[in-house]
Length: 531
Image (cartoon, rainbow, N blue to C red; front, side, top):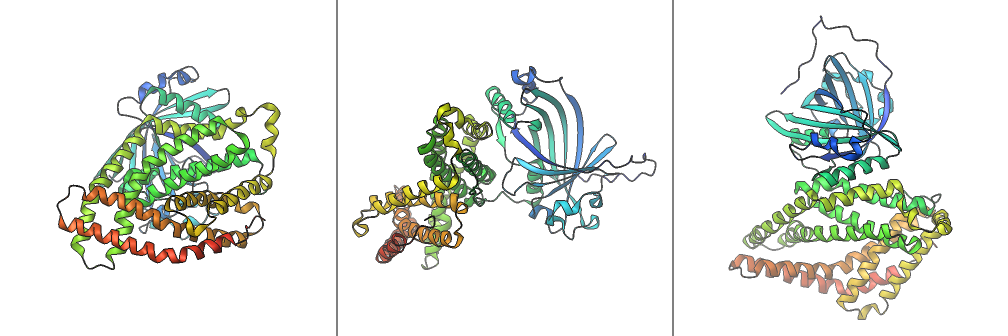
C-alpha cells in the first residue's frame, strides 16, 4: 500500500532542521514467537534495570529506491518515517560491507513523506548515491508497526530495547514483524550479549541477521539472500596476540552470520558453502591460537563450530552433486533422461536437508553459539583463561606468532606428503586437511609480511595442490551419495545416470593422477613467503 505524501498547505511549518548526525549503529535483533513479545520485559535483567515500562509509539515507514535498484545494489536503505506529525528521513549502509550487526546511520527531519536527499551529507555517505535525485526515487515497500521503547541502564552500558510488532508490505505481499531490537546507546557492546543471552533463556528466540529493510527489499524484488565470501584478512603487523584472537574470531563470525539468511532461504548453494568455509576458518584459527594460550573457552567454541559444520556438510554434498557435478558431466553426455532422473532423485534429499538446517537455526543451541561467540569476542574472555603471570603472552607481536604457526603447518604438510607417490587415499586425504589449515593460516597472516607477490604465488601453488587432491575425495563423496540414490531404486534412467557419473569421475581421477606428483613438487619446492 502506497504511503501518501503530506502536502497539505495547512500543515504546520517545519521547525529549523537540527544538525545531521552520522552514527555507528550497533544492535542485536532477536526474532520472537507470536504472542510472547510483551512478556520479555519481565526477564529479570530487564525488569531490574529498566527506567520504566516503556513508551509506546506507532510508526509508518516508506522505503525508496531507483527503478534500477541502485540503493539496494549498494547495500543502502533510505526510508522516511512518520510518527504522529513528525517525519524523519534515515539512510543506512553497512560499516564495512561485511558486518550485519553494525551500520552507519544518518538521520534528518523532513517536511513530509517524500525523500529529500539534499538534506543529507552526500559527500560523507559515499558513492552509492551518485546520480540519484529525488525525482528518480520511488516507493518500494512500507512497514507499519507498534513499538514499545524501553531504556535499560546496566553498570557497563545504556541499552535501548525496541519491542516491534506489525507488518512489511510490498504491493499485495505481506510479512509479519515480531522482534526485539537491542541497541547500544553508550558503553560496552558486551551488554548487548548479556541481555540477549538472558532473553534466550526465557523464550525460544532466534538471532535475526536481516534488517526490516533487507526483508522488505527481498519481499518487493522477489530476491533471496545470496552467499557471501569472506572479507580480506584484517590482521596487521602491529597487532599483538590479544588483538589477533579478537580479529580472527570476529572476521569468522561476520562471515558465518552473513550467510545465515542465504542458508535459510535454501535457494543459493553458495550460502551453505561459505558458511562451512567460515566455520573451517574459525576452527583453524582456534587450533593455532590454542597452542599459544590454551583457552577452555576457545576449545568449547571450536567444538560448537565442528558440530555446526557437520550439520551443514550433508546439505553441501547434495548441492555439489546436483549443481556442479551433474551439469559438468551432462555437458559431455547426450543422455538427458539419465541426468533428469538424477536431479529428481536428489531434490527430496536437498529439500529435507535445508528444512533440517532451518530447524537447527531456530533451536537454542545454534542461537546460543552465535551469542556466546559475540560475547566472547566483546568481553575477550580468553584473558580470564590465562594465569595472570602468563598474560604477557597476549602482548607478543603478530610477526613471531605468525611465523611460528606457518612454519609448523608448512613442516606438517611436507612431512605428510613425504614419499608422495606411494600415498594411499586415506593419507592423501589427511594431507589435504593439513593443507587446508595451512592455506587458511596463510590467508590470515599474509598482511603481516611485506611480500604480497610472494604470498600470492605461494597461495596459488597451495590452492592448485588442494584442488588436485580434492578429486579423489570428491569421487569418494559422490560414490556414497549415488549409493543412497540407487539403493532399492528401479529406474533404469537413474541407474544409468549414476553409472555415467561414477565412470566419468573414475576417468578424471586416473587422468589427474599423472599430474598430481608435479603439482606436489611445485608446492614442496616453493619458498614460503614469510621466510
